[in-house]
Image (cartoon, rainbow, N blue to C red; front, top):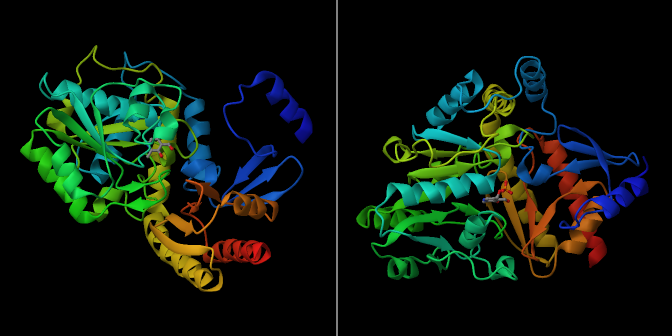
Length: 393
Ligand SMILES: Cc1ncc(COP(=O)(O)O)c(C=O)c1O
């Protein structure tokens, strides 16, 4: 099929709820993706942060092939080895909690909100979330997402949610009461523009949750599984959550989400209270186990930390040359470039020249390269961005 033929199929049969670029991707390998017209693109935003150890990592592909030959899916009426093994690996790399598996970030957050309600007392029905957050598109997680533009046309949403400005301790203190079941927060806001929480802010949330018998939920759907140079972003802040969610990078390209909760909290999720048919099936869990093994064997946490600093330094150098760059922020391979003007055209021009990046909130370029990227690939990306910015001046 030609590019045009595929686009026509979409126009006729696929709901147009995404703004798509006119390219049909047919192959992904490491840090590159290829389209039907033979273009090769350096992918610095692979699968919206899903392909965090690169496209089609051989270890993940092998694990999928092997598992597919044995058992694809078995319902949660039974036990299956990959799910148990994955839960153990995750627990040991985080705070020793227990896991519930699902199929996406939104579902993991949905489970977290339900668990918080189930675990705390009846009169506790309120949630606090931060402005600029993004927690998903189901009705509960959309309500948790404190960005009015995402709520348009869907009001009224669920009751009980209070939004506070991100990193504002005073606002947080005044929003708290003993009716609060939980605070849900991203340690680093992704879609909101790569906004880093301060350590003091997260520590204050922890204290207020403890004082009010509320739970702290960290949404690590984007930050989790190594992107920031540690297994989970909370490990940079010395603040432990009661519940944590993850998705994107976990499956190496297959759909999986997970919620981890401290053992005493997890005990409130008893049979009949929450479930999902596909959650934690053998195939996706085998892939996720392979992702964790690959990260460890290839020292990808170290690479993410080192490479992240390298990109930030390079982007700081670009800032000296191009006044459209206002600032550079991020941890590890979660990097935002704050522009003084719109970024969409820059992203489009980069793609024309073979570099894929992203723009969020209109003016923040996002770099979330695969953890397997090399300095040479980063140099190549920076060179393309440099050229595009020069041409735009
Ligand atoms: C921090 C965060 N939470 C939740 C979600 C929702 O995840 P999903 O799209 O897998 O439902 C996203 C998606 O971008 C996210 O960035």
